[in-house]
Length: 395
Image (cartoon, rainbow, N blue to C red):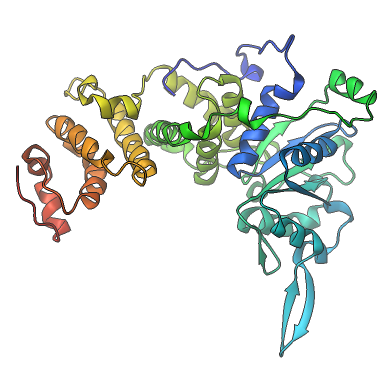
């Protein structure tokens, strides 16, 4: 997260040069792939007839996922709630066939087509997207959700998404690619390509480190910008897209976790699609002026951090949060990681113990049966007294 950011192209940033590159690896498709991999709902808007639904069905098939397309405008409540069945003196809802198929699959993609053409379906879709429930059946964690809409001016009975619905999605614009379409004609689209998650996303082994860095950066940024923690736009059009809330910031962390660290264009699109233009610009500006430490590097050598009063307490706080997230993600495979965290705390607490208090509390709870160095105990004596259950032998 510490590299110099670029502004989204629609806000005057660099234009990505796609010349000579396959359209399937475009930034938009990389973000879609990252979002469905992370389980973050996506809302795609694009002109009718440009292959939105067909492309997603094809991608899911090539990934080995079960795909189900539900067209909101032509479905009734039973398709979203299930069929009421009376038995044993009570009424329950039997899940529709499409739900059963998704539940049987290891991974699935639910496509809510023509979402903006059915305002009556908004409350039902809200429950599916947020609670991941259809009637009384909960969708498995392996099911990802993508909603598709035509622009309002080209949609049948089109209407803006209500803010509570919009805030659950990552919003992207879709543009059909002519070259992909033209080459597919020759084979009847039998050999149409698809994005390859293994090559366009970060390797799974890097996710915990990515998540730790992103969490630290965003939490630290939001401490300095409380006005952007939850900010519903007053303009109805803006409120129907991405805007900042605790939910959308969390979803942004999830998407950036699986994107490659140097994929700046996809990063920018994900930011804009989840928290909107104002918050995106503010976060990018903050990142540009704040070089954040890599928690893995700090665990190797805590002295690389400027812990002195002349250092940046906000950067130290971001690091503390990142270290905590990084260690929690790694502790099962690397139990000794908390010993290295204690070393960081010992070095940093000489100057900024307050910043390290949340990290210290978690670390102490993880090493309750171990001896702790005196340099760690003394700055947090009050915390130990409040915890009340730890007997510590100084070494």
